Image (tube, rainbow, N blue to C red):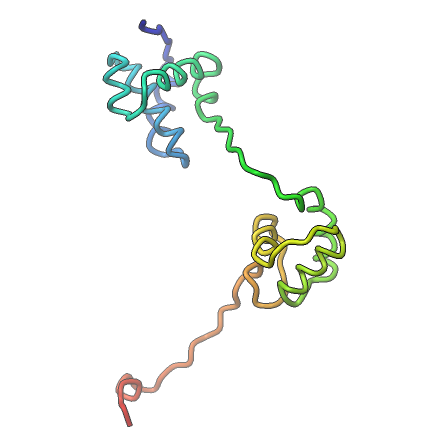
Length: 161
């Protein structure tokens, strides 16, 4: 069964732009499928070219019918949410006022403030994700750039004296 979709010049322009420039490959694939549909290709050929099933292609068409190009851009990315997330505001405020010197100290402060124990790696990821910096040379803070010592001659650096 062939679906009848209407494409405005504006939507065609946006499909053409987004099929190469959208940051998510899944959205690029959706845009490509609709772009090919707008050019009258059969569904089977579109599915082969875009490397999807015909059922997925019909899902893309349904999305387009529901909300146009904007609906094609919506992607529901699911993942587990950290238990620390509900404490984000209070942790951020605390760490801005009392920045810990090390990740280990940050880990113990988080455990004391929230009662939630996490590994250093989990705390580091939480800090990075929520832009909470730690004073010491941890992964949450940006590394300080130090100028390199200049060598007086390349020959000295290669000599075995």
